[in-house]
Image (cartoon, rainbow, N blue to C red):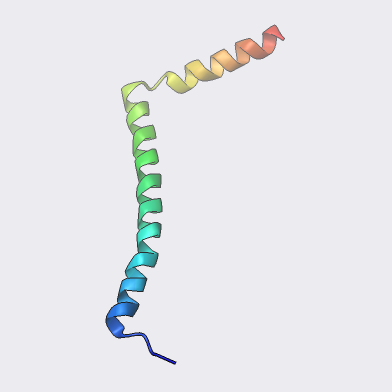
Length: 59
């Protein structure tokens, strides 16, 4: 049985951590986009809630 070299093992570690890094980066971008949207238009959440409430009372 052949042993993995140290360099090969570290490359495997980098490959495994890359997907985690990409996942965390995408979550970070989603959070940043939500914060930015709130800063640009803070009443958007209130407008969406009012629209949902109005549509539910029509039914």
